[in-house]
Image (cartoon, rainbow over all chains, first blue to last red; front, side, top):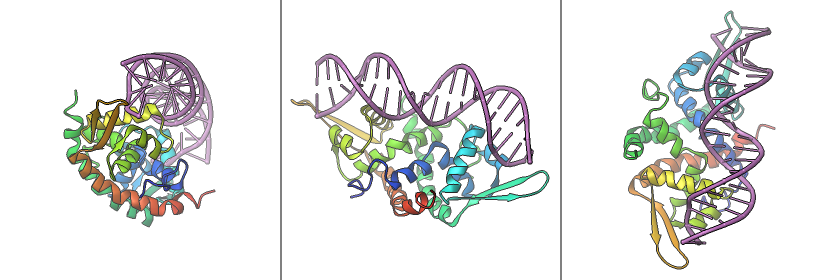
Length: 113
Length: 113
DNA sequence: CGGGATCCATACTGATACTG
DNA sequence: CAGTATCAGTATGGATCCCG
């Protein structure tokens, strides 16, 4: 029933899905699921992400109302990223999936040379 | 705690995640969550997918032990795709997330011009 | 019908430099 | 510190043609 007309090519669900399930999106949401983080922390925790994709993905998620960006005008400047209530709802549904993938990752990827 | 060392750059969890959460992977899993489907059906149901990505994604998921491929030698040839038990476990955790995204898609994507 | 092979466009990355 | 800008190399995806 979800596969009927609801997943047409450019529909909102598809777009939202691309944001949320993107390579770096899930990892950022996972990181923020535990605590508010600063730019530099995210850069370190989400290993392998480029500055470009970090900025781009954060801006997308912020625009989606999933991530909250809070600037503290100080020297040095400080910017904190956290989940919005909507983001929290999303992550609550994302976490069980992530845990399953983490638990079964070896079985999935391992067997194949 | 999942964000500690467990998500290092090339770790199995990251790789598995890229397969499962890929743009087309989720849509194929969603389609197969309801019933076994043939190549042509998947091509139609997962609107917008190219033949290349359909073949590639299916082969990846098959290699991961998530999707089962069954060939019937007939004329015309027939190939059915279905979820393995592992795939079913995965989809059970994926579905709640998908439903949430579908329900909130307009709120996520809509508000931004 | 179910793909494989090929070529081309785009997206992503990495490195570097620069700013408020 | 927290970004933005730019450029070049590479990976990824799409379109098309073709075959058993």
